[in-house]
Image (cartoon, rainbow, N blue to C red; front, side, top):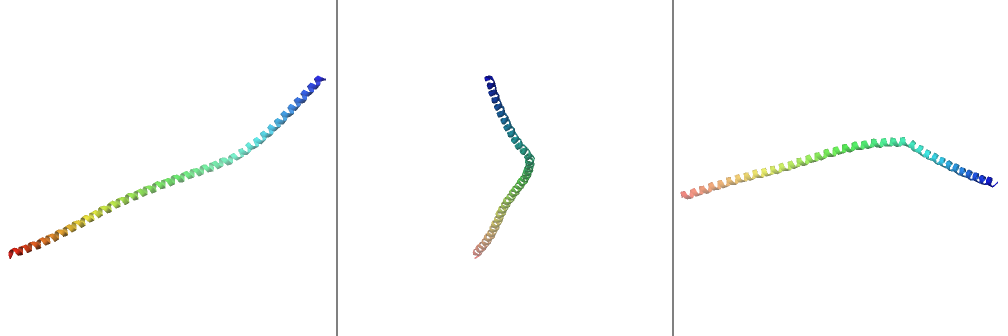
Length: 135
């Protein structure tokens, strides 16, 4: 009888262990189902994410294209500005040269007028000196 009691206790313990195992397995099964459901949802989102990535890639390409165009335009404007600066510098130099040339011409004219006046005065003085000598 004792042996049977022991065996019965063992069987009851074994049954409890099996019940615990079954409960744990059922819990794991439920956890796995939940995990599978989450993964399925993620899989459903993948095509949407893939499409969004394509859209973002296209936008990025468009922005890069715009950026290149803007950089080209900036370079062109910088070159144009540099050309205008050079033209202004050349114009400034040309005006300075013309101004100096005009001043030299004016100085030459004044020198010529001054020489004419000197020659005129010298002729008058010579005339007066000639008159004084004749007297």
